[in-house]
Length: 146
Length: 146
Image (cartoon, rainbow over the protein chains, first blue to last red):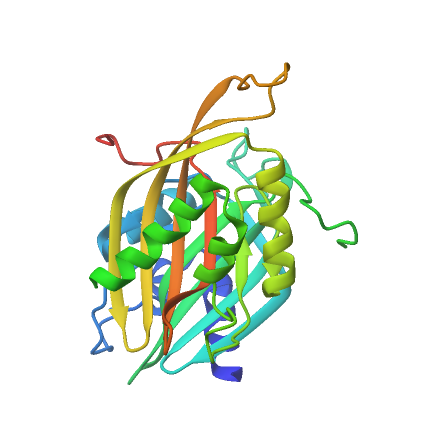
């Protein structure tokens, strides 16, 4: 279970560093993994992206438009079933876009995204098979969110 | 694979009929299933719901506020890995809320949601472990969507 949570954290730490290679390494089908299963990714508000090429391209686009991003993960829950692990979490995001002036940071904005991250056990460790993030627009029927 | 796709269709057909019992039957942990794994559900714009009680309550709320709903599923893709199946699809939704006048149907609205549905193989067939639906707000980097 700890290894699953570490793999989940690795995704967000790679995004915070803007390290595309590290992000690719988190996903299934990385060079050192035997398992080339088809990956699937849904960013908040986006359609479904399929396959490593589309997924990598999407992260390139996101990184190009993000000067600064930090994830505070809350409500992290994981369940392992056979060689598959399901992790759900709330991403409390603080991010900044491109600055108006060189060397400056754009205005920081906060956001809340809920994510379902699905990992597969491979010889190279737990690898991300599917990521689905969506914006939280309403509190639904939960009154006691914090 | 056909059984997985049938289980996926069963979810949407139950929602179209407003049949709460049939929706509950699609989910993991139904009375006839040995497997009581913790279910997770994210409706578009909602926070994470955990456990059968929360999930069932959410569908009750949705059904109470929906007079009419129809799902046209497109871009359905499934991949089975061991006892877990990952299905992604686009839900093209036509729905109507409560009517102003008795016996009338409220205005119909269209919407597009992308869903990641995760099923587990149980003695009672494929059962839904996790559903994550999110609104498509932008076309991302896909120019040729249909």
